[in-house]
Image 1 (cartoon, helix red, strand yellow):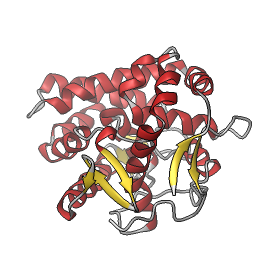
Image 2 (tube, helix red, strand yellow; image 1 turned 135 degrees about the horizontal axis):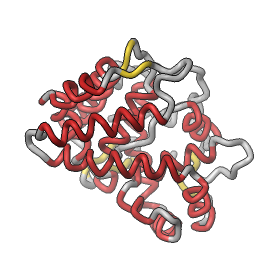
Image 3 (spheres, rainbow, N blue to C red; image 1 turned 180 degrees about the vertical axis):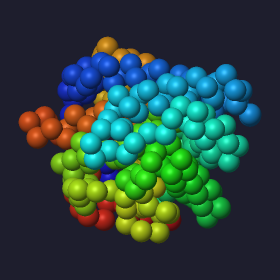
Length: 266
């Protein structure tokens, strides 16, 4: 099983350009502050305040607080949460991992080109689900779904696509079966099927990025948002979102399609 791009560079360019320019600007704004936040050993009050304001504003524009979506905590609570050393450490651990350092070989997750040790995989999974849990519980009122914690994670770290309903449809259309559920709850860890889907997808997309680097690079560079060349997690988020529309071509596929695309021995 592998993930590959079947669209050409022109189709990738077109998908990126037709994605909402306002959403592109939103991501760029928060991600720029997120990089500064992640780079600091102890984030300053100024950076925390800037990130809290920008993150809350963009999550609101992306649907948080609307009907059937969780309500947002106030900006002061956002700052309190982002100031916590525990959350900052988890996010910094994830933000320091580039997709170029991940891949998959013979159903094993690899980091830096070699099979990851049990300790490394545990650290990755604990950082990922620890961050999602804190973001979900502390930034929102009574949140249970993975959508908005994953959006916050994407905006701050750029690690991977956020599983909103449109992205899940795009994954389902691409052969990542089992994503067409009405709710995707926040898993506590990677032991359950939905937890494995979150924890394994970055490795599969990293492998795809490496195998399809030429077409992906050309598609991004020729778009109006060439800065996304350094944001592969966001690029895949955009491509899955666009192919979630049934009239759009499928560009990224799981080959062969199946319900156990997330199964790996380690």
